[in-house]
Amino acid sequence: QAAKKPMTPAQPAVWGPRELDYAVHDLAVQWSAQSSQLLIACSSFIPEASNFVEVLSVGIEGRTEVQAARRLPHYYPPTRVRWLGSDLLATSGDCLRIWSASGELQRLLRHEANPQARCT
Image (cartoon, rainbow, N blue to C red):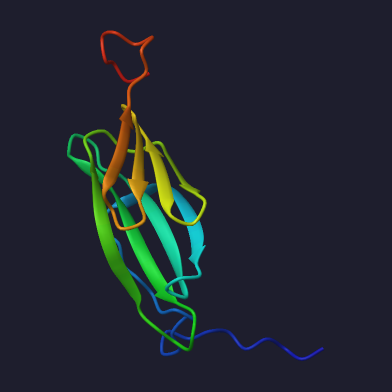
């Protein structure tokens, strides 16, 4: 067997490294046929601060940089992030939010059995 050559820091990863300035709590991956890009939604976990979901885009043709496409605001850390088909993103935390792929809030759903509006 041939020995595998270890990757050195001078050799970038396939899509290059992307440094994040927050802890990722959850993520969801979606292929966008329209833009021929991989979309990665990362939810932040920042104690005692406003949080967000950051959508990153990665072109898969050749070696391209990971680009920040948009940030979706959340007061509480988003606990779950899921793509719904190719054009909607669902996030949960204090409420269920449905976002368009372009980052516009489409629906905000509150849990009616939680009249004190407490996170559980």
